[in-house]
Length: 224
Image (tube, rainbow, N blue to C red; front, side):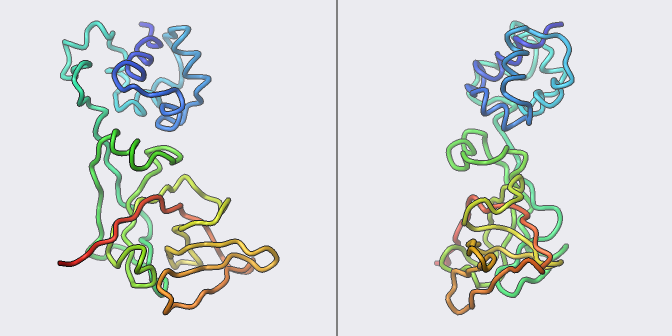
């Protein structure tokens, strides 16, 4: 059975997505997706990834749009099975705001958020793909003023390089940090805390440094 037209149906008609959006969701190049749709291809190694990006199983993607009334999914309904997306907790280390503590398996972390794809497109539009989004819980007070200890952060773990200045989730050795990083030519990378009680320090070439992701969104909690 040809699946190409089904991809176009789910992408454009049911979800209203551009080719670029589906590329971000599935990891399949938009040119390849376009070619599959136009040719109405029946066989491709990319179908599994595309189906997952659309929030479907391969079996569901294989169903003709004319037969969607036979499934639990209503293509004319505003809410579809692809409407919900869970942003899971970062699975390795949680970031530490303050002295760079490694926090593994401790209580108090935010394990995940269930949101809609519409919410993601409006609130976190610039990311490397929804599947690269993760929740990191920051602890400590070094970033107070931007967010507080225990607040949830949405981190894009698809960002692995420091291409421009911003707030990053990174590690030095086995210590996780969430800080503003600023590149200083000839010196290194300056690590800046929002709380001015903490001194700025520099990441040098000798350090075991790795970017784990870029912080895209943060929520600052307040007590009343």
